[in-house]
Length: 501
Image (cartoon, rainbow, N blue to C red; front, top):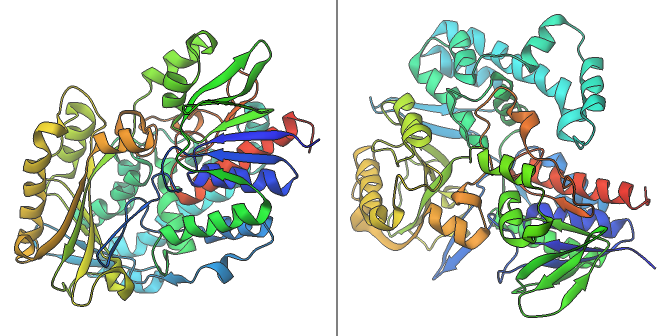
């Protein structure tokens, strides 16, 4: 009889784990408390408007290709991936506009308009991230960290030069690294922004995360025609193809634990689901707090999770307009005047910044199906602090909405307020309530420390045999490709532990 696996949550990590396990012959059941799959990769549709409410780009597409191949399918048959170039338009408070490109020569030419020095150093900056990727990707991103000595040995085998170790374990921050390569403050702000891709501050996250801009420039920025949620819909098709049982509107009450470890799950609506292993695709801190029985929680580990700093959260406006803003690209950034103060507000004061950097994704610029004729669908995201007693979104929700729209109007979206015909607001409180995101954090935990990459919780529960984790709150981190890899890693651990591989 095949082994049975129960997965809590049908986010991207949970679905990826299910596909890998089912392809190896496991019986896999997913229990999702919401009416749709995807977790934070989700969708809002209404009256011709279509908004992706979570991730807004796909990079490292080969990770997704590999996942589809496991199920005997083709990503490129299922989705039309559209390359975006220019990749993003940056607008600064002084009126300067800067478009980034995945073409290195074009990027260098554009940077040279600001600084010849910075243009010359752009390839060197990417080379720093390239070497970090070459050293760390295979032993770190693509594999479990259940054996740190083995991971350390694998890293050492890739260290061909003394400076390689200095790159991987550099004590400087990403901002300090950026300043070494770029003199112009506009360019510094552009490359500092990549810290937000893992929910962190460029002034605290380590320089090793220069890997993020390298990945984006090397692998490109892609948009699945029809919207990012098409990826979630395609994964549902893969689940069916490999025989995974998907249960929607099926919240889990608790993980059932016994003397030998995890034995299954109990559903809120009643009934126990026996399982040889359980994967939680819920935030790991939320899992321990609400789903693991108190007498089964390893106290030291739970205390460690409670002490870890959550990542950035987000304040989101979904705006449908009855006019077109032709100066917008698919991806747009409107920078704050004082970037350091913005992150101080978020992580030190834990309040929403009064002069926020604003991200606007207008998929209607690429894909006319996303908005009614003559309109735009604007996904507006502001970096926000994780939930705390220092700031109340209940009290400030509408005021902050007005602050964000006021700034967008000042920076070029003329008459925005009058042209909004559809609107929804999503706050960090909503993220916590809908997706079980601990304190509303989008990426689980921040990477605001030197050893952050190695401090992220692993994919197998300590001291609780049979419990595993997938998703952005555990290794290897947040973002679509890494979340897919977390599912693969959890599946590989289960296959190894149950003697299948």
